[in-house]
Image 1 (cartoon, rainbow, N blue to C red):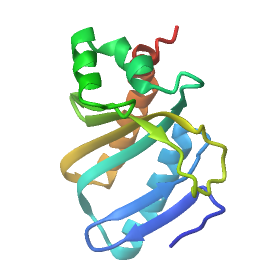
Image 2: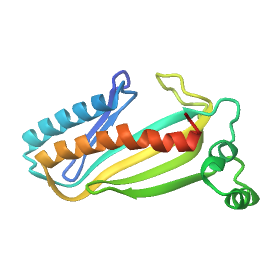
Image 3: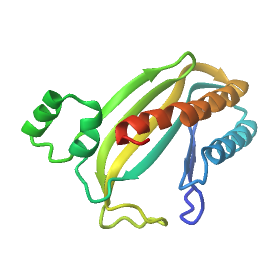
Amino acid sequence: MTNPNAMLRELRVDNRTIWIHLYFPETISQIIDLSVNITEEICEIIDVKQFSRLGLRLNFIHDLGDSGNMLDSVGSNIFSSQCLELAKTFGTSGGFDFALALTTKDILITLHVAAIKKRREAKLDKDLPESGVLVDADIFREGTSYLDDMKRFSRLAKDWVDSELPKMEKILFKRQ
């Protein structure tokens, strides 16, 4: 199911997956609330009682303005000069990216940071920068879970996004 004019862009359901793609929501709470409601309805309809993985994937795009080169703009905030020189030597030309794997008591996070450029053919509802930095956060919990666990996971994921992600972005982008 695809709906190009709504926040709910795509909904896929099969015997192993419930996939919900939301597009330009106003808040993280909006993503979580809508996703939980949709998942609960689907679980009731197809009689799902447990999950093998719970996940929330968030993509944030940051405009670098005129600086344009992620390696200089962001890389120098977190990597040593030797590491940056090595990246430049192998011809990254601003295409530098990296990933971090983080673990908390109850959730796992894979954070991928990469330079991006807008595709010419992209037909998006919102204005996006021509180039920038994508911060892709995959927040998940693996193992058997139930519907009540989904609500707890959603709360933990939102708390992490609200409290920890801004700290990381402050370091990445040298924000005060």
